[in-house]
Image (cartoon, rainbow, N blue to C red; front, side, top):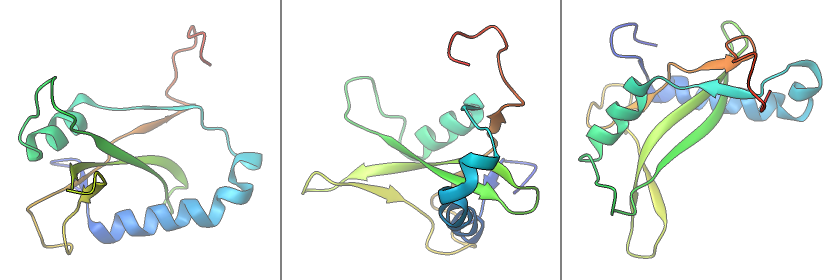
Length: 122
């Protein structure tokens, strides 16, 4: 992950989501993840790439679950989408790790340990 802009590459996103899918069947039996703390920078970045849709639009973002294998940390990977003519929201993804037209965002932190101890949702 880039420490400057908090983006991850396409290959990192593919690795992390595959890691989640590989671990998912037994992951929750051994690890606790209730939520994610999401920096506004991630949301603003993806919205900016989508042209800053207004409140009246039907624009959506998508979040994928992943696991960073370097430290086994749960991740929420955020991408913009675009609704096609058939009504399907298509992910706005770079076509390679060097494509800079779209980004894959992640600087999320799992809860626990980054939790609100007084939240009724924990």
